[in-house]
Length: 309
Image 1 (cartoon, rainbow, N blue to C red):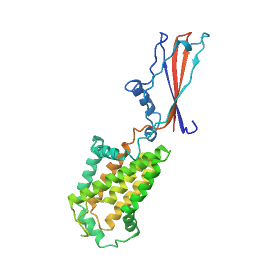
Image 2: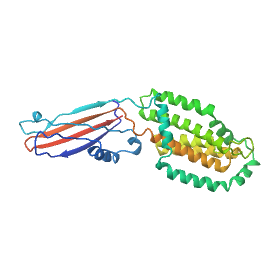
Image 3: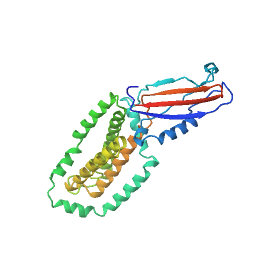
Image 4: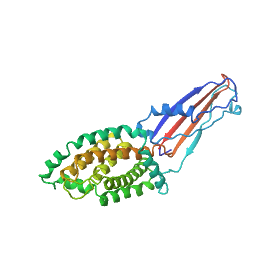
């Protein structure tokens, strides 16, 4: 109870004329849906990711009636400390699930929007490349962005967060770090695959691994995961950093504008998908039920309090 960060009260009153009738408080497809719907209106979207309710069956027994006619309250506390499915052993299975999740219809709109922007930016590829070809390509922005997106920088950083998250009691950080690790693995695999298949030459002619921009993919994936798990304020800052990293690839003349647009699109979709993949996890919480019985009026009521981590 000391870990309670927020308490919500949801009170449902139901009159039953026949004593001894079993009162079903929550069920998956009926009462549970109504309860979840009301709960969704009471908390923020970020908090919803930390709520997953299971069905509970409670009965009101005639033996608990008070002959005085006064309501009888019988608090019942159910402690739930379910093990999180976000474990090292579950990582490959979750990775496969998230890969398939990339093709979910919920990603159709951002994919089509990104496709349109990428297509439109192709017409500006040559102009933008020529603009940066004759300029200093080793500015603070280009150098910082170049180093930030390298695997020997991101892999250890994300790996450290992932290991820390596995043993963390902070459910939000655990979900965040797990999503980040999943996103990075998907980013790396998809980026490497597309680069090999497409074989587009870089503007500076260095090699044929231009499309898409891996730096843009990684930075926008990270920004999206931050936004999904911690909200729009830190997300706004993260997207600003991601945009700077993407711009640095243009300034360094190692990517076409359309490479960067495609990378940002893929990164956003991957970050959104892996974050959505941990939405339904069960977290530690406890629920206190308080039945009220008034035999004089033959009224039965049920109140319950949900204590969230």
